[in-house]
Amino acid sequence: MNYIIREINENETAVLEDFLYEAIFVPEGVQPPEKNIIKKPELQVYVAGFGKRAGDFGLVAEANAQIIGAAWVRIMDDYGHIDNETPSFAISLYKEYRGYGLGTALMKRMLALLRENGYKQASLAVQKANYAVNMYKNVGFQTVAENEEEYIMICKL
Image 1 (spheres, rainbow, N blue to C red):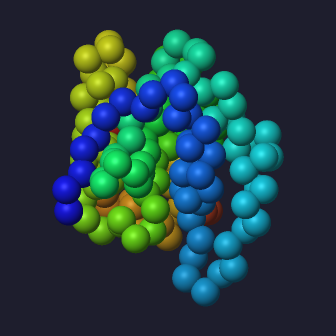
Image 2: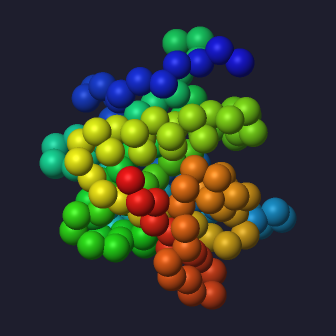
Image 3: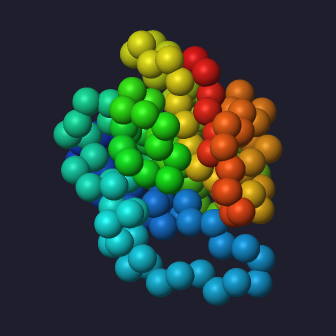
């Protein structure tokens, strides 16, 4: 598959709401939540005013002039929050583009961008049953805490 990874443009940040919804892990056989779930305050921290704060970085994967995936980070009090110097990750792809290595490519590119900008680490939270756990481990994330449902992971840069 031919694709490019590039920084998100200011006029494209609304697409992050679509990818925020796509990032919600839905176990096999479970009905997906309604789209308006992303309007909850605990999810809006990922996208509200994105690009307006220091530490907001976003990348998109594009194929055939269409955005098909996104990885973005910001320093926020989210599920994967570590401290006020550690950006938290959000990443997702449209379902039909998963399994081709795009997520790994987006993660690696974002980690490099954070390193170039002087960050020492990045964090994320992922449900234990999510297939993406292995991808996160493969790009350098390690579990630093967990609860019944989720791992909190850090990647040292």
